[in-house]
Length: 300
Image 1: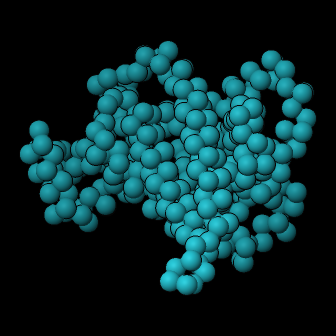
Image 2: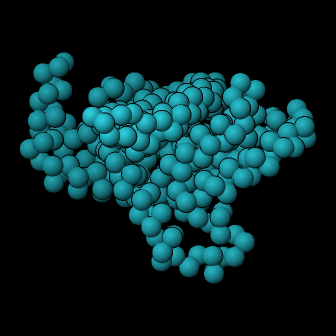
């Protein structure tokens, strides 16, 4: 099996242009931009209740200020340029957490799961060659979003602890050959590298869990690295664009924050689904004729 995988990777390396072209054509044929718009819309509905649930749970074990600072770093990756506004909303909600009853809690839990449900459906269209062979049980699909919410909660706790430790390190300094050297720059570099590694890990886990079937870790890691690197470039461009050239606040006024967040989420969803398309095309590349039709899901 290892030999087959190595030969397949070698074939892709020998025809990189054909592979990229077929991946773009398949992404367009799967209506990737339309799927990304749907994922971004439901992600916008899910992001606030999801963050509220995480904050309520973790505030019992982590000081609120430390937690909000860490979530600010996390949201800066997810919605560049708008993390401060979301953190202020979360802080305001924490100050009035007594209004959360069982009805509101269950409502937020439901809306938090919508983005994961839509993302799973979008993945099914991209990995349709797996779906026609094997389908996922509906109970597993129903429980999967809530398992991922729990996973993100644990991940947020780890991010909070690590970032707070690095902040403490950044406030210190060492004497190097008689020179007073601050560790603030070092802690920032370590925090950025850990954030990039966390991006790749989260994206790889999505490609491992969300699509039907059991992909190899190698394929999922390939898609995770591609999507993470593209998003790193994109989010820095978005921050620069909204800070220098954009006139979105003039056009949309009080709706500016929602529009910017939705725009950022659509870009992220596009790159996320494109990474999935890279994996899907990698699995089929060289094993099917270049003009082979895309398998279709049959219903009824």
